[in-house]
Length: 179
Image 1 (cartoon, rainbow, N blue to C red):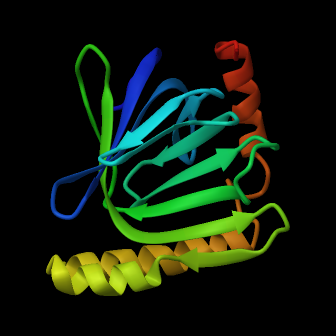
Image 2: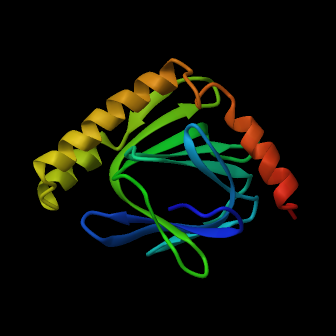
């Protein structure tokens, strides 16, 4: 069950349950695609051995019953992408003083750069990890199938990859005043 307002925590893990990227966000709302959370410029993002502050606002779609997490970035900043989709296990919400959404990152990423070019990243990492961490066959199928479907949707500009996430960036701007 997802939250209905307030702060949330996004916790990504690596197979089977190793720490990976985490950050705080604010729940913005929901639509037919799932729950939307936002992180303003200056949000701390960390994982073991690395940490940084975001250089622009971003909103993340947490879909219901789909194995990915899609992040959409406001223009500006230094990263070369507009959309970054982590292929994951199906995200799950847990209750608490600050609700947490968790998923296992399955290495593959579908990215759309600011020029419109779409590519899959970390296929080599996926190939190595499926052996070294003994990904079960169903997890390999889940990752490959999800990656292919997300790539087609991003390349085709299908919702929510059609620019409509800009409305959620506007919600974030009115919800959280950036520094």
